Image (cartoon, rainbow over all chains, first blue to last red):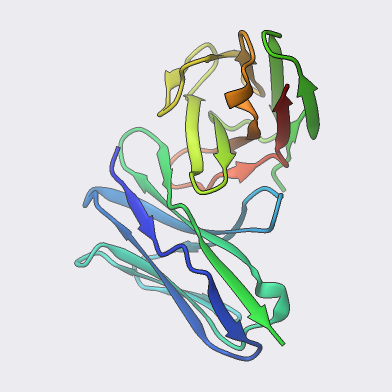
Amino acid sequence: RKEVEQDPGPFNVPEGATVAFNCTYSNSASQSFFWYRQDCRKEPKLLMSVYSSGNEDGRFTAQLNRASQYISLLIRDSKLSDSATYLCVVNTGGSYIPTFGRGTSLIVHP
Amino acid sequence: DVKVTQSSRYLVKRTGEKVFLECVQDMDHENMFWYRQDPGLGLRLIYFSYDVKMKEKGDIPEGYSVSREKKERFSLILESASTNQTSMYLCATAGQGDSPLHFGNGTRLTVT
């Protein structure tokens, strides 16, 4: 199974900052992409799907670059409550077998 | 809203015991998964199932087995628990196509 790679961080940013994470994938046949958020000792929760044309949900923007095989997550106006680990998930077509990155840790400080 | 329920939040078992972790979903999803998550290693897939009575090995199936007798229930079995199976176990489900995964709230298993 192909890999999905993320910078583990931590990204340490002040409140109000803009921060971006990238996630690279190696299988060009990958078809669907997601960002999850995981708080300490909790289960991952879906943050947003990533669409080919890019998509936005409030302060969060996700983009897909198929040519360079990466997805990105941009968080604007960071809040303390955004502190968490962000996991990217890539699903390769055919059998449904999601592959997870190891996550990027974000710490937002006052 | 999808509901994925794992039978226990915390579990402590002794080495050599047979351990059952249960996962039940209420959304009629075909796909169900068992992961374990350890610090620095991320989520690793143990087993998954596409349908009733079907099962496939994931990346780390050794020491585990699974059962899916009903569509809504996917059980993970540790035949003889060992200390290196101390971990957070996460069950997840997904519908067809490009559906995202939905997780249960996890079982933190300690094997002593």
